[in-house]
Length: 360
Ligand code: SF4
Ligand code: SF4
Image (cartoon, rainbow, N blue to C red):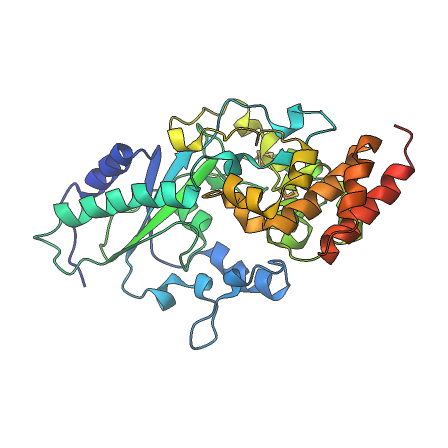
């Protein structure tokens, strides 16, 4: 195991993170925290829906994400880096065009954020190895963006990046919550930063604004009801009682962040990779519904939108059309009603029924 770090290692890490393009960097101890104790219960209650990757277990059957000490016993510190992905485009709550859908802000980017963040993390990791090559020859590091055995936002809190808001997002007092996180686990025993204090106060805007009541109470999210989960991770049909609340969201949902006062003056990103691709801000619903599998592949190459799959996006567009209240979508929905994928065809028929009841 590595010995104690030389003076200034923490500063060198933070300087390397800034050099790599991260706006925030902090260090947390690789210890379990009270928040992690809720994780097994959250999984046991089925709140993760079909996101089986969150339920990955070790050989003893324990949840990997519930204890870093178990899956990475060599880790002593967690370096958490954050980069802002906000652009100066409007928020979903400011856009009212019923003919268009909504794709979550993080998914507009030209490059998949996993790659954009990991590339920067590797730069920080390399600097760490170079600067400590002589004193820490047995240094171990591992970099992760969403894929590690770790609940990133909990370590982000303890690294002082921000607090975990009642909407369960990490929020920084100056940058808001439009942040991608990356973590480096290291065997180095580093001085940890102080956790960021919770600044939600008496505010409950996110809880009130959530259209599907997915925020059961402060800091408690039921993924099964969350539009982000329903439109991206959920396979097959979306439960009927939640479809109306989905509104015109076709991939993800930003509402609980759009209404957060800490995002009112959120700065925009300077990273070119996060500039929006053409057509993705408030996209035309008929464009998405009629897109062929081949165009989907080309259009969304290297985009997180691929995660929803072609038929998932068509299913979502069909539901959004029904929720638009605009009968001009009936011909497109009739076509989707004959789709070979049963979730798409059934969603289209649901929307046809809905639109036939409106006069527009
Ligand atoms: S992302 Fe949307 S659906 Fe999910 S909790 Fe936030 S407001 Fe609710
Ligand atoms: S909307 Fe209010 S309660 Fe929700 S995360 Fe933001 S500050 Fe916290």
